[in-house]
Image (cartoon, rainbow, N blue to C red; front, side):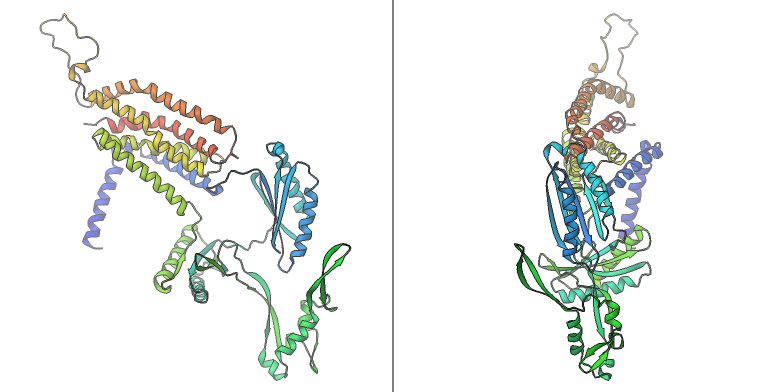
Length: 537
């Protein structure tokens, strides 16, 4: 470490030591640490059930269905039709819309008539649909919406816990870099099941049967691979050749081999097949393996994207450390200009959430500068600013101890508290300063006696800390009524937003966060302001 770094470190240590040994904090360290850390810990834990952003929308029941690999869209369509027939029996449903994207992805969106939206019917229907989904065999179902309880009968999870995204302008080179990252991660014994997926969170490659030939054995048997493939294709032939009208409806005309139904995987591998003038089995000259192939090519903002996904055995801290090392290795040592590796940011501190955090810091900084100019002091603005984190404790506890989902209304509550909580501090500090600068005779309480003995001196006001405490109590008694009325009126004005319940987007969370923060600001007025306003000397 250089001398400059040592100097910076020593300055930081001295600054930290002043904070830790500061008497108001040092004498109450355990209580302060327990309250602050516990409330913030509960709040962070509650964020796991939040998506941070919700749109105002009508109550909607979402039913997702998917078939196993190897099934067709038509098979999924038959299953979805059965669910549609069941939903059509309910008159309370306004409309339901079905979308089928692939053999493993179909969605039914159910909306309700306005008079039934706020009744118990949506929850009852969700329970009935869940029961029907359990009875349907051969399909994976997911039922969500209405409330926070979701149903999912897909017990085989193919998702990965960790992923690193690679972006670049050339897809072939990007694939090679993805293979290199895959090899780098595979050297860690805690990494399992590392695979290359397409971009996004649903880019899992599909499983396909791959036909492999042993060209050496084919040469010895004097068999052409193309001849064998043509013979196999004629046995497994199935193709749509057109449409025809049947019973007033257009139906597909499909030409298929008569041997298709009896030729399963075992027969393809072991049943002798005529290839030219010879008979042979596929197992003697090759084989069929099931592999992950067909990675979808995704392009965004003129850049291709691939994702290396893997499972990690260990704690979250170790997993994060490995991801950071892998990203640093790729960006610093492997990837040229035009390519980038990053960990997709879907947590609290992604780009959108960082903007909110910086907005809070900016608000506090601007407030400190304005208050420092107004009070002509650097100490009094700190007393006012420190009221804001104390009020945040109320917001942390409100969401940490409840099941409320934290959305953009909670962020707005942070900003609201940053601006409104300081009002009480400004009232008190302004009154306190005006009393400090009043002439000395005005500080004597009550009328000065007209008649007194000659040797009796005129009473002098107290000096030092006793004087400042007396003046702070006097300013507190003058302003506590308007401060209390301000807090109570703010809380009463936000109470109507609580009547719509947690389903209300933005306004419910905004009201809960602001009300809880305003209540805790009372503690800041009573305990925080005196510590900073009254001098100890």
